[in-house]
Image (cartoon, rainbow, N blue to C red; front, side, top):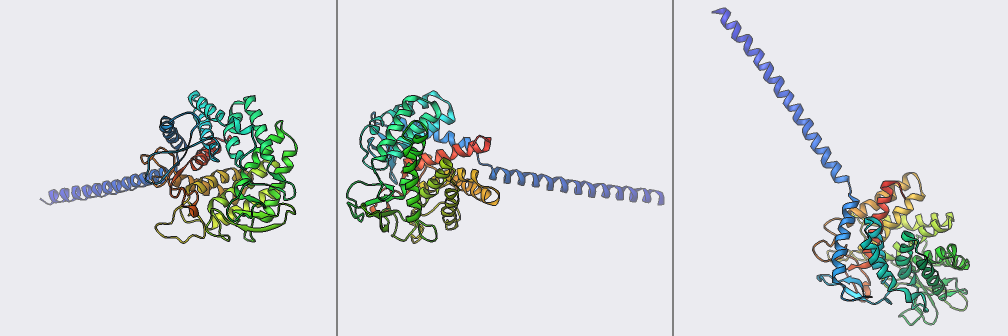
Length: 420
């Protein structure tokens, strides 16, 4: 009887040890499994699929192509709550963004269908290279379209059109002032007929610099540099925030005043204006190699980044009173993200990492359900602000937001593959 009790006691102890060890093993396996699932989730959350966003853009552009009612019209804006594009003629300052977007989609997809459409819509703009420009925006119109086209195809016809366009832009240059006139007409608060220059004009210098190196007049380079230098000296406050517009005496070149046209106030930082400055001085460094432009690009970038909200998508003006109804400007975010991806390639260390990460956060947010148009309309993005003081294109989808968004995605793809 005693022997039997010892046997059962022995078996009980062994069984409990086995159960405890099994439970412990199961606990460890469970913890490892949970940890593995957690790590996978983190990895997925931090992985941004660039190709998926570009595929989305292809799908949206396909639907837009089917909506264009007739040749030589360009989709510009879809107002809040609408599903219909507002179409514009070739003379509209935004006409180059649609063919430029098509060129980027061709670059990504390698599909000849997109090349044919990009060529078609670019050629609708050809006559702009043959006539005096209505304003400085010929750079946007012709280099976003034919510039991208030449980069991707090497078509000599495009090169000729680009060089003719650059020559037309120089007709607005005032050597007394040292900048290109933006609006050659009466505009409120611009002291016409004195000389006005808007920050947006920095974006058109790429056309001149490229042309000077590719068969155009070499003097175009001097005009572009004069414009960038004069703007750098007069368009910025001590903290490196920018005026939207500077008015100069057209005879003496003396600065009369700095004002806004699309911003909140003369002393505010209009979001897209500062974005043009970031992009403009980055491209000036790329095209000239002058380190002063690289230094300046960082200064105008750093003040912009320091004042952004947490999600890095700016309100339409950095001085705007923020409440639930204050509109954002996705277009400014797209311009800045694209510029930062290039600027990051010119700097090193912590600054490079800061610019790269900021651009990626901007693109991830723009690619979220909060900013992509998706089923709401056929544009790429929602929540851009065109001209708030005029009550125009507020919280809308706008073609230049889409253009710089897809450009930024292409640039990020190049960075990821080591081709930028």
